[in-house]
Amino acid sequence: AQSVTQLDSQVPVFEEAPVELRCNYSSSVSVYLFWYVQYPNQGLQLLLKYLSGSTLVESINGFEAEFNKSQTSFHLRKPSVHISDTAEYFCAVSDDTDKLIFGTGTRLQVFP
Amino acid sequence: NAGVMQNPRHLVRRRGQEARLRCSPMKGHSHVYWYRQLPEEGLKFMVYLQKENIIDESGMPKERFSAEFPKEGPSILRIQQVVRGDSAAYFCASSPVSSGANVLTFGAGSRLTVL
Image (cartoon, rainbow over all chains, first blue to last red; front, side, top):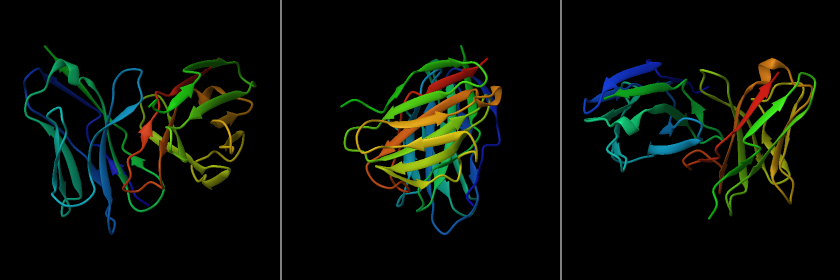
């Protein structure tokens, strides 16, 4: 069965600093990888996804993630964070089955 | 185009009562997924339904929990005889086809509190 590990439960960072949120998944023949963001008291919103092709994927708000098959990782990065990026970030994996498997989440807290 | 609609957003029940959570998928989506988020934890898959069929219920507790997605109307997650451990946020998601490479669209969630 697929599994996802998010190594950091909380990541505190100052505004305009770079950040990396780590995600590792269990190996499978083929996987699809996602990052979702959850703002307080809201549902999950898709941030970015890797399905195939280029291993570096980007979101419209400056986040990027790189699929590394040899490391079985899909770390999320942003070179300069804003206060508004404070949220919970979930990494998720699926194969060709019918469900997403989520990690336990990383709470990004951006301080002024 | 309304997104995935869940109601109620907040529900308070006493132990032993029943909780019914409703989910209307996005227009054109016929696949519905329910996830549960316990405090300080990630989302756990519960059940996947298509219209009138349960496709995968491997994440559903064996007792007290049931789900349906009738031909007409929203999907309903039903919890009978609730206990304090059922307190959680329950998220519904929908997709136009079976998941995998497809992106799920999530609702805002229903937060159940059991007193």
